[in-house]
Image 1 (spheres, rainbow, N blue to C red):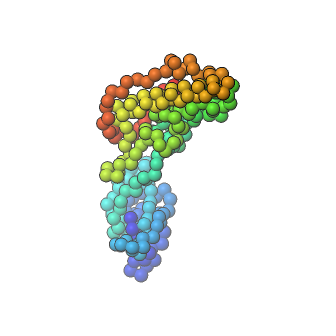
Image 2: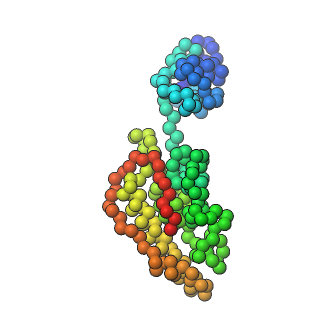
Image 3: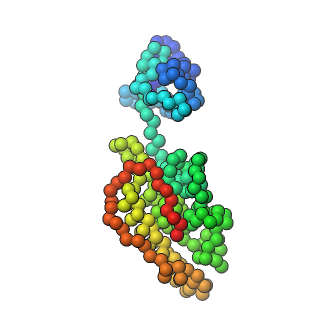
Amino acid sequence: MFVPSEAAGIELSTTIIKAGIEESIGAKLVCDPHRLRHASEGAEAGLHHVQFAVLEEYKVRRPRTVAIAGVEYQINEFVDKRRKSPCSRCLGFHKPFATGTGCHNPTRCEHCSSAAHSTDDHSCKHCAGHGARTCPPICANCNGLHRSDDGTCKMAPQMNKHTKCWLVPSHGQAKSVRNQGRIDHQKALKVLAGERKQNGTSPVVAAAVAAGGGEEDDGDVDVGTSMEVNPSAST
C-alpha cells in the first residue's frame, strides 16, 4: 500500500502505521512495516510503498483497506516475482521453496542428483580414475545437463503475469522434458567416452551409453497450474 509521510499535519511514523494496521486487521504483525521505496512520479508521488506481513496462524483474511490516523488506504497482495530456487535438501520444486524446511525426501547430490551420496562425496563409474565430478551433471527435475539450481531448467516454476501465480509444466510436458534430458545426458556420456578414448584414457562410460535410451513422449503439451514439482528418479 502507498502511505504519505504525514497526514493532517501528523508525521506517520512506523509506530503509527503499525498500530493502525494491527487495529484494522485484529492481529499482530510479524515485524514492523517495511517501506520498500519512495514513489517519485505519477499518482503515488510523495507516498511511501509500505509492506507488512502477518503470521498464518492468525488466519487473517486480507482486507481491502486499513485505517491509519483516520485515513483508509487500499491494500494489495505482494507477489514475489523472483525466480524460485529448488529445495536445498531434495533439489525439487515444492513448498516451501528453497529452504528444505519440512522436507522428508532424501538428500540428493547436487551434481548427479543421486540420493546415495552427498555432493562432497560424489563418486560414480563415469568419474572413476578421472577426478570427482568430471562426469556431466544431472538435474534432479528435468534430467538435463545442468545442476538443479540452474536458471535455465525447463521444470522450474514460471510466474504468470496475468494470473499472478507460479505455473509448472503439466504431466505431459514434464515427461517430455525429462525424456529429452535423459537422451541429452546419454549423448553427453557418449561424447565423453569418445574424448577419453581419443586421449588414451579408459572409456568407462561406454557400457552405460549402450544401455541408455529415452522414453517416448506422449505428446501432451498442456500447461498445468500445479505448485509442486518432485525430483525424478536418479538415472
